[in-house]
Length: 295
Image 1: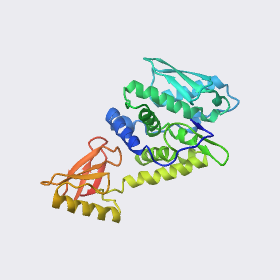
Image 2: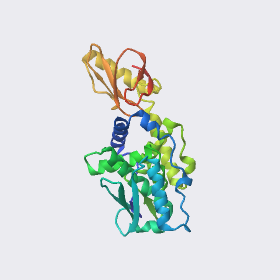
Image 3: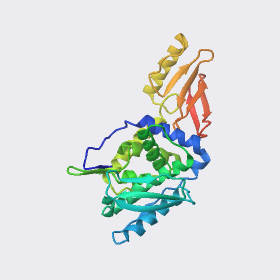
């Protein structure tokens, strides 16, 4: 939790975020991802200052359990002084003990964001899905929360001005925006009307631009003129001298007869390999997205 300190910006963890999306599809399948087509809504986690603190926190925790489809899990929420925003004890269950930072006693609007992250930990624990590095595993957790419809709360908890700042989670605001945009493009769902933080809206816009650029990389047919020109140059080089390093790190050429191009699916980031033979329609084997390509 960044609270009053320097907040990192940009896309420093983007490759780990993309790997996390791929890991979700591999573990869940496209059908299960599609089951999360409806996000948690503001009404689901509304928390008035007049609400009882502990009863309200338990209610929001139950909503997260419902959203993540964990019917046999019970979250016990308490508050204490601590450095981090929250902590969950991962046990065999069915009870999981979540501790929230004492500051949430007076910042109740962000309790839903903290619980979105911690219950995502439980969800991944139940799936037996993790990354070996602790930092990468936290990025996997934030990515899961955002991609499965609860993590817009984490971006909305981001606030920054000349005298103060706050951010929850391990992704940068722009990376949260990127994952939320990937979800929005998949489900045609715009989370921006739910943001109460102007800075969150701006970060989402930057993430959306980056997410849209994934669908405009060669050899996808929607690639722009400059990308197509670079791709043609790399393809020529590969045909003349064998597999060549690509100028765009999202594709590379392999073999010579036949020459193939390998590139990332813009939806799940699984690598796809197809022959170089002009216009072709490709279906990603992992997420089943149909892609128009010009190889």
